[in-house]
Image 1 (cartoon, rainbow, N blue to C red):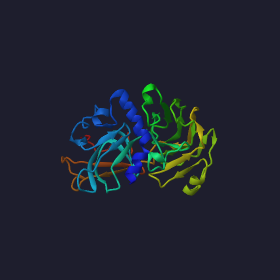
Image 2 (cartoon, helix red, strand yellow):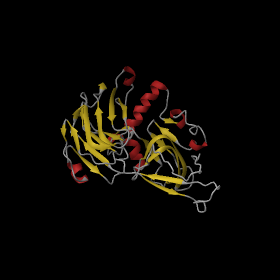
Image 3 (cartoon, rainbow, N blue to C red):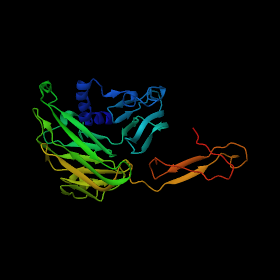
Image 4 (cartoon, one colour):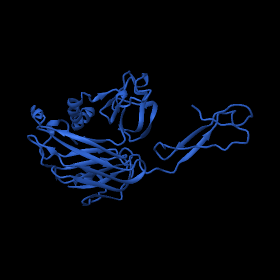
Length: 324
């Protein structure tokens, strides 16, 4: 049931890619090699049992009778576990992933802005006053164009449809301001919403100092207060590593607006101070002329730390080489 609800809520994302497919011939379900042609593993056995859903979701189905999914390959970029919020820096392989029946291995590419229909069981639950949600994983400057039509007729062939672009501006890594601009909806079709409320889930991993929409939005202190409010924001630190929830009153679809989250961060949160631990296998701590391997583990809070440089100070006469 939960998967069916997720599928229904993702219909705006899926429908936008269905429209793209009519223009480009590129389907929504894609092999990794289509989006990562220069990745030497994307067309090999390493990626055989996984696929992309659009550009932003990577799905690694459990295809055997087991609750553990082994060897999930993630290509270049930052990937976020959809269920836990844990971040991974690709290219990397997850050796073992716990995947009971209610946890399909699903990862979102950092930078994604995903349009959704929140809180529905079926598209039939939608009304003229229903909100549009954006699920945002801010990293750098990214955008997504939502496609809409009447969903019933073939009048889209005659130009009866509308598009609306979301632009996200965020730091590439670490602390900084995040903004989400929803541009005016262009085009028309029967039943198009002239105004609607918006909801945002912004995966920052850190609480913003303030959230603005023209003026400062009220900060709410609990989910119950957020659910009752007409508009405002609430930071849930226990939701997938830290998520900012924002809702607006109904806004005209003919005008653009910007939600600004000040004093927050890119997905993954504000980088914690790094710590490095060096270990050497027993018997290799010393010994002239005997090759040995030193392992370096670099940690920074809950997230992977990237772009690091590690150097070793060794006695005179020793030689070092980077392991391959």
